[in-house]
Image (cartoon, rainbow, N blue to C red; front, side, top):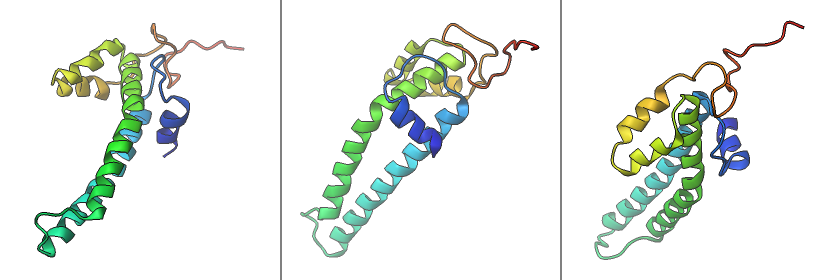
Length: 138
């Protein structure tokens, strides 16, 4: 949960630097679970409407949950792209590869997200794991 809050609060629109796999995947997991909860609310609302025989009306629960999905989706769109760009940087790739998702090539970007961090410092900054860094002896 701390990784999720770190992305949303401190790195909301930070497209520079690097992000570890753990931070990326924890943000993605929490984000997905929150959206899933809103979708479940919407389905419950739809089920309530259909069980009452109200085929032409939508329950207030469905409308509220749909609004929550839209608002939450818009609020987390920017940090989602930002954490994805930083994850690509960590693997040693340019953040512009994120545009492949909008071209329908999500699987390609997903493969890059799964890759381990590039050891040492790369052009986007030091390794967030601290692995591969040369440390002074004293």
